[in-house]
Length: 259
Ligand SMILES: [Zn+2]
Image 1 (cartoon, rainbow, N blue to C red):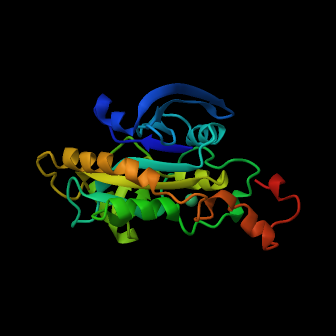
Image 2: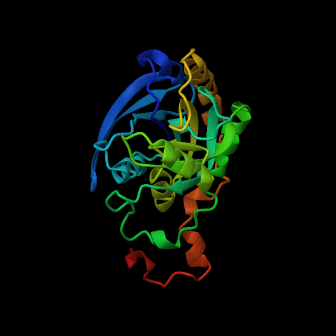
């Protein structure tokens, strides 16, 4: 199964071309309830779960989201985020995909699952290579960016925007971190697309001219092709990340008892 995490608000009918709505679920997890997840079924194709997801301090615990995805039998997750363009050559409506991330979410409560050996999981590559490759094939204009994963809902200050750029970040967003590394802990594929909807606070905001809507349409048109273009079985290795360090003898026999 596939899951689209949707952190970009869209008109209600925008997702109809992904298939007919066939099911809706809320999932109870040890970290609270997640969902509702909506299942859409394209004719003759495989179903896609869709989870509306907006950055705010009271949204679902990210651990519940990933846990629920695993419960629903999801293996591949594509997140669609709206991001702040920090780099001065990014403009509103630019389509980007994160090639790496900086985790600046350190004020949250624990953002790891117990007993998954999180400390041993490599973060390279930071995002699923299968999904990212499909994104670049079907959205060839999308730019690779370093994603600064921050906590909302406050906007960054101009000083912070300048600091993030010095760190090497190109965009700032609230919805991909810690989700991407929680997905790794559960051996799920996770990759993302972003649309620049705001400029960093050290720049004057440009007038809206429909650029974001145009990019949303391009992504919506590409989504079915991206999902249809994922290799089966996965070639990325995300589904057996935990086997790596154990096979290499890095982990002790009782490694699942380690936090
Ligand atoms: Zn993968």
